[in-house]
Amino acid sequence: MPGEFALIERIRARAGRRDDVVLGIGDDAAVLALPPGHELVVSCDTLVAGVHFPDDTAPADIGHKALAVNLSDLAAMAATPAWCTLALTLPEANAAWLDDFLDGFLALADEHGVSLVGGDTTRGPLSMSITVHGLVPAGQALRRDGAREGDDIWVTGTLGDAAGGLAQWRARGPASAKLRHRLDRPTPRVQAGLALRGLATAGIDLSDGLAADLGHVLAASGVGARLELGRLPSSRTLADHFDEARRWTLQLTGGDDYELCFTAPAARAFEIEQAMAAIDLPVTVVGQVEAGAGLRFGTPDGDAWTPPADGYQHFSGGHA
Image (cartoon, rainbow, N blue to C red; front, top):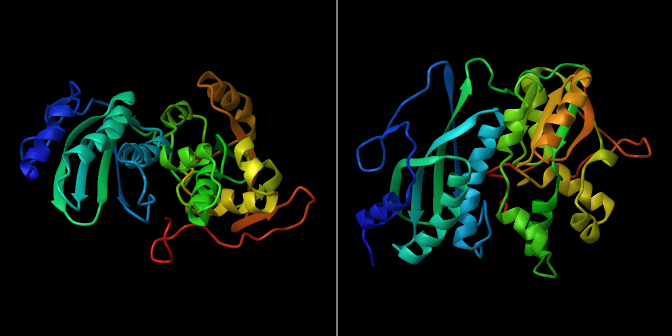
């Protein structure tokens, strides 16, 4: 069984290296060169087995998801990914498991031009903490506090697939491979975030469900909103497996979508549609920002609707 330093060398040998990495894995800290005129955007997320992914998740899928959920934060801030660190806790020094994990992690890193520049390894229950670093031209980061009364509320892609996959896994019954794939392999919407610079007024990635995450934007911006449930974009697969009311619950409170939710003036709608069409990503207006506070929901019949839960919160129950 390999020791800690053999595992670190295994990681170092596979980590890519950008030209702006002055010093990477192998020293006490990384040294990175920042381009002039840019601000550094930093985010950190921890994933724990049985909380953020089912225990039977393949190592390559865990590696992909571990980085994807962090890149999604950079996407929400309209930042270009650059570097990351990985703190990995393993029950045992399993080289084969590590290689498979790195297959998923580094393939996504290569796709987005990200260099792994450091981290840590230790023994314990399976978990990983990733810190990502991105770059944005000074003053152009997309924040949560810019939504204004009258703005449209948009989402990318479709909502509820990952939550549907998790619900099927928990039920231990018939399951859709497509929904499980959306749970295990989220797509960080980095290109969408970059395209929204100068168009969107506020943004957030959807990790804990649309209701909870949009609520953060509304609170930061000092506004309220109304969502039209009939507009929530659903995949055909989700519609085939869940009825309408269940879909609404999954879409609003299920989490793990890692799509983007953003606000923008109605006058920018055509520009947004063109920008998203250029990267082949569907987007949907699902509501409007209103004066006041709080989030309200309307059904296609015009009735008010209340979700059975607000969204995922740690210390109040587990994802997986």
